Image (cartoon, rainbow, N blue to C red; front, side, top):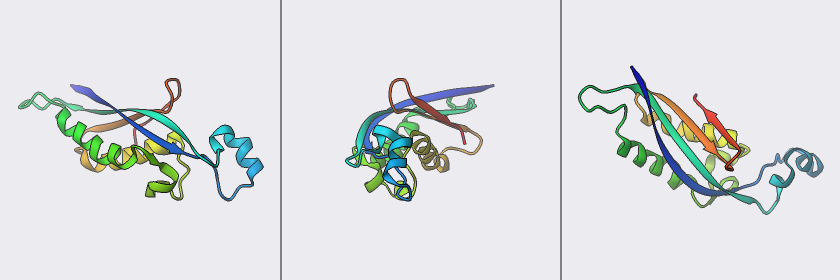
Length: 135
């Protein structure tokens, strides 16, 4: 029997969506207001889910305190109150779209989650816009 457990987290970050190899008019056409050269911010909501068998000894799929601490150390400490383009190494060459941020978060967490467990990252950029990545 597989069960999914989830932990919600939050971080604030600024970013700019643009490609330096594109002209300003193309960046403006594709990314609109998100191409603001002075950046813009979001209050990101994150839901990290782990799916697997329930451990018969503990009753846990995964200890939620361990998951909470992982999210804090691997995600919140790395991204919260940061300019993603300028301060986060993963985005020096990668456009920090919600899709790419979700993949980066998944890649940061995956090595710390047991291999027999499935990992899902759901990232809300706004209350109505979100992405889900499962690897």
